[in-house]
Length: 469
Image (cartoon, rainbow, N blue to C red; front, side, top):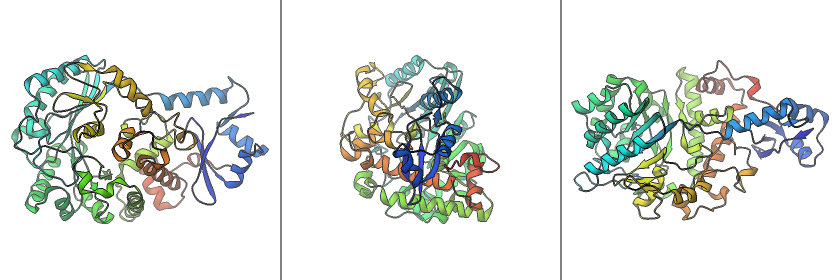
């Protein structure tokens, strides 16, 4: 019998999580790990590994073929659709303390697409070798240039077989034109709700009256297009984080059933305003406490609020193909079909790369809409966007579910060769996946209530909790 290489990590002093390259995982006691490390597996160990797909008798048998199929599904990223972020303007009508893109003041000139850039952007979209696309408008505040959004939408609906638009808006301004644009079923809104009134005011508007305008506009948009086409997320200032119960209640008040906790990004203006965003320990503690409070509240009230990132990480563990969220896509090789086009026509592999260029830390542009993509730069960036061969990741049981973020490494450390365990990305995701595994193996009814509903299951099957003898 041949055992596929196993990676392992202690969850506590009694339990260890192990996985193979295909993402198949199980829990074991330290004695099992000792036998595996000494090549002294017992007959019952070997039976378990063979039954669970971690071993095979001979090349080409069912167990061998099954493993290869699972592994290949983990590596495959579908290429039939595109995800493009467009920045028609960098101007904004707010001055959020944690702004990560270094927005331009509302009255500034030279921070919007001109007519030529618009036509070049449409030409870039037209040349994409896909028939399905999601276009996300960011800024600045995209609705300041509704005319540009309308022009892109009209073109994309003609060009692509299937299209979806997401407008990332602060919703401080609504008018009949904006509301008419939102009436189209293919348009979704993503906005920010940082929690209770006083927290949102402190972080984003700086003015109670402006916060009232936002809350009124949010209510109006939900009433007009329904809760299914609008999402919100809170950005957490870890130096003054909202109480979890208060934050959840703020979302429930608008009928939201999902929120996505986001830490302040160590980019743009946030570098000076929120220096604590550079480290991960306080964030990991808050995140764990929040998930604990959320699970307890769900069980107590009978309502189900999802924390998107935890739910997504659980789905990543349980099934291949959960690649819609690019933060954890692996491999995540930069291409023109997954790119950001800035207000000046420059093309970047990610929004974070755009931010680094904006503060003049490093130019990671991979081309522009006038001259096309820079294939040499794309080739140079590619190796950093796959974790399969990283000297630290290859020993981690979470590698099949995780990703990599060399852009964040550059932002925080000025280099991409930081030892993985020292990076913010790794420290954050070790904590998230540790917690996900702990929750998955808990048989507490409160935990099962939330997890089963986040995963769309009646209950958590024991098959999802394999334990070595």
